[in-house]
Image (tube, rainbow, N blue to C red; front, side, top):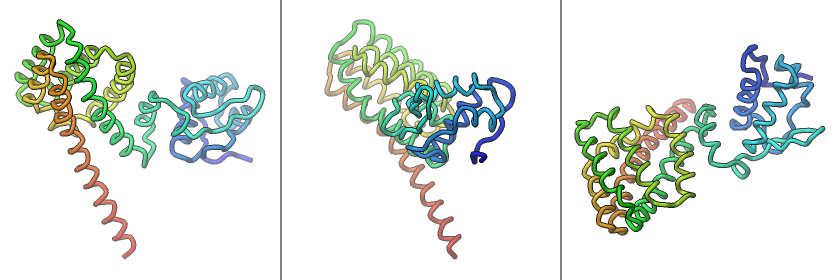
Length: 254
């Protein structure tokens, strides 16, 4: 019996195409946690690909902790919310998995708001000698960008890159690497959400000054104020989206 929701893939990058189809169905819930994937032979027939492409796709799904593969046996779908790591954030944004979009973006922004202040505190506390000059130089470039978001966005990113490195915390650095990949994959989307934050050059200057003075508490507070701007703007955007959705639902009822 044919498995629903699968479709033959184009004869190019076969394992990538198989991986994307299965990944998106897992992330969207079409393939539910605990369910078994079709056998390799069935997947080959329904997708129109060879067994090597299917096996490579299953290997990648297992590495992403989206499925559990039993050698010589079946592959079971995992609940990615309890099994996967931070690297899945990139896949969630790329997959376009419907209702997951807004919560994923909100989660990314909220995570920045949680980690950023402590990163700033540690950077001020540890006072790496070359960091203050680098931060002030970036702020100077931000002031010269004349509130142009396309110029401010990479400068803000460079500022936080310096700050995270100065924190001396490897766990934060690795988490930031994942967030950076997510950020870069959604560059234009996040630009609008973070507009108020990107234009807060006074806030960035105050943060750079606190790091230079070694004032950990002030650096933490400055970072929190900056990042709160992005979080507040996102909350407003999502509130308007929810209001429109509620209005559309009421119209359907009528």
